[in-house]
Image 1 (cartoon, helix red, strand yellow):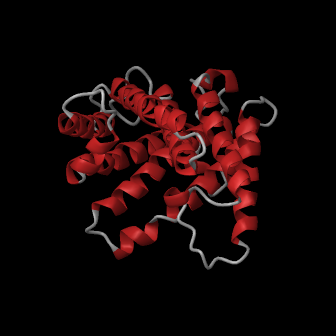
Image 2 (image 1 turned 135 degrees about the vertical axis):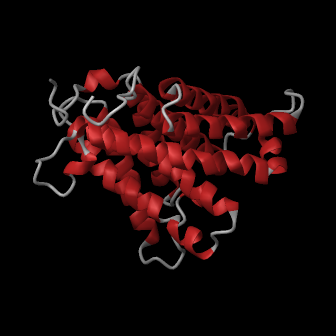
Length: 268
């Protein structure tokens, strides 16, 4: 019986690992270029001391860890560094949830980063096992992968709900050449929710996660890439592109690590 704490060889995570690494590298480069955080996705208060220096430091971290994931000798260390970094990043959205819990946008903002964290957690669980005595032992191996999968499934649901609450805003992102904008806003929202429920309740979970990753990849390439081509000097568009890319890749990492058939019992 395979040891659930044994590291999974890095090549087994390809090509999703490379796509995730590209997202981290892209966000790192943007942080270095603008000496700032990822706009609304990294809501660091303006009063934080040495804000620019901290932003540059996070840019270096994402850039080096992204590159490190691509190399077999450094993949484990990179996953170990990225995991707590992504936790801290997600926690930046926690004040919004606590102060405005009735605003769906608060759940959307945290949900997007939770999906990103789920991918980083999965890589940590697969590439960077720790000692059984470590307080992080629960987060590695098969249990860690399962917990990351649950995190994704729970938080993609409010992302889908945002398409219904903010239907006009969502429809506004759909390219003009696609008809029935509101219909597709509702349809994609339902797709997010269906993916979360499918993974959460084991209803074709692998297919549900891959469908979510594919949908996010289409959003990235059909919405943000053409926008960048039209206005290549706009920082917001580049940031949105790489955030969307990284989240899509994170979901693909989660999907890659869902077995074709989930066990029906803890001892299976």
